[in-house]
Image (cartoon, rainbow, N blue to C red; front, side):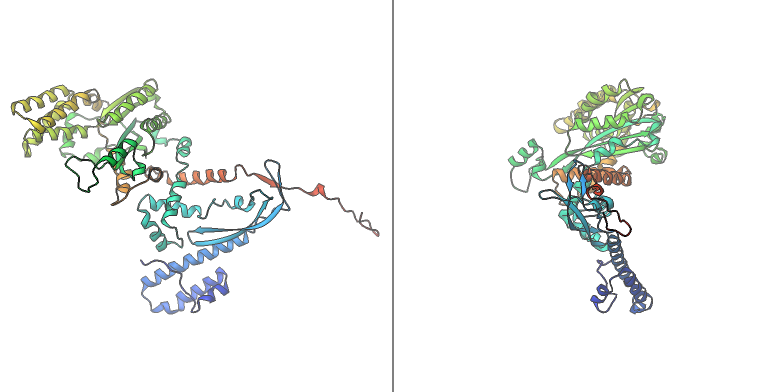
Length: 520
């Protein structure tokens, strides 16, 4: 579809402006599309032109609506909430960029010399504090969470009458995200979160940043490395800052046997079809906040979901940067507020280490898969130390050295270090989740799909604002959040500028007319 342009329904472009009213414009549209030259046009061209004219018709109707609402004159003066009388009246003009295009309004302002004016009509209309209307802001943000900023103005040009430059789109996203924390502080959990197992999970995902958005240590490493575009083997680019992705949800218990899990791992069963779906899921991420702040937010979200009669599980990979805050923040808080708090190591990460060890041992084809399954069964049965010892013995028998031996030892060390979080036989009997598919999916859908667009580099504040809006979108809270955002912004705009009409009746003497005489 080509970009929308304002159609000349009339042969003379000035004719529409002279007739003025939206009704007149509509009657000419009706004549044009039912009896005009469109009768010989391809239907796709008619559709494109009709859309453009409907948008223009909407702009005219909106302009006439504003004109009929008046200028908001409430009398000779108003009294501000601090008791000060504002009696200097002047008409102020305001432009508003809307989904239909730009409209203008005139409204009465009340002020004094050296005082900023109050416009009663702005409060009545719930006007935004700047050029762009709330529906247009919402549309810009909806496009921003799904596609690049360069595409937003192009998309708006095709399907609306608005024009929003890239820089202004960035500002809109930043401003629209400012009520994220307040919204989730007051939001009640979904009713489905009252039952089942309460699951908390977190993981990190790198975001390519501009230099000023990197952490201090990363920035120093970035400046110290060679300037050549070609990097040596193993040399990191030092361009990323980690975004911590978090999720809280409820899930029904699903009791399984070890054979069930082995079957799912070997795709003998439709694992996705049998899997319980998360309920009341909320996901979010931050590239700006420290880890302990995000974990405290997870704690607050978890406590809102009434954990008193639930088992609470924290599912993670083996990264100490994620496990340590869970031990320091989540475990002490939940210990006396739930039936049981359990940290679970993601089984998928364990399997990845098993495959690395098997490949280092020279395994390939069906033999490698059988060896992985052998060690996996040991781990699922709760015999982690046996699996780790078997891997090391195999490496010794094969006389592995160098990188291959390091790979096997690293896999064995990973299993032994995390064995306290790998009691899978107990977890399966209790119906607990043993994989972190939810947080892996969140890392992909919340961060990777949008922030790894080719060539993208992010500033810290811009990345944080977009992460918040994407979190609202992914959590299914979009419409509810926008109602909250508009309400809170209106309160901010008018909170300190309350007023009431000035009652001037007692300032003037009452006139009484006496029959046959003079007014006294």
